[in-house]
Length: 161
Image 1 (spheres, rainbow, N blue to C red):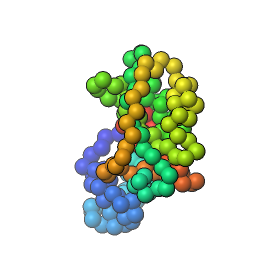
Image 2 (tube, rainbow, N blue to C red):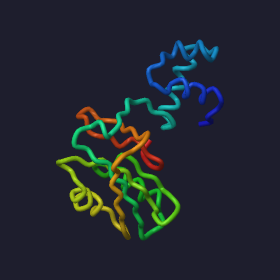
Image 3 (cartoon, rainbow, N blue to C red):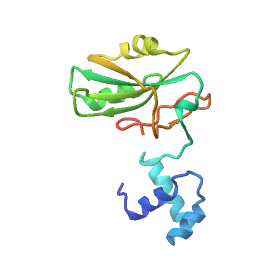
Image 4 (cartoon, one colour):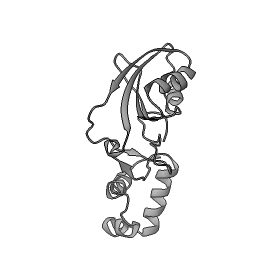
């Protein structure tokens, strides 16, 4: 899908996620149906998602961890997709540098770092090494929650839409 100036303007006006389509249409001199149709297409094609996000530090008993991953093969997108499906993962990025992937993980009292590595990462083949970075304080990081108040893995740089 081509993201043209109109799509960018619509996305910018949807930043708070609650702007009525009618208000966007009026501001951009479009019909409400055009705005609704474009937003639906952007969502259907995985370009846009609209969701409430929360600062993970406001959640009780939650910990953010970044994990640098080196893999043995070069199918980085496939590995990124595999990691994106693991419990607790909220984003995966295929990157340059000494790591192949940077994985952002949300842990809690019932699912800690040991469980993440022994129950989840251990299921993925061809992992050469991992290095863990515990986040003490984050800036501008927000995560979506599922219906049970747990982080939902929809944020990503590569993989999940």
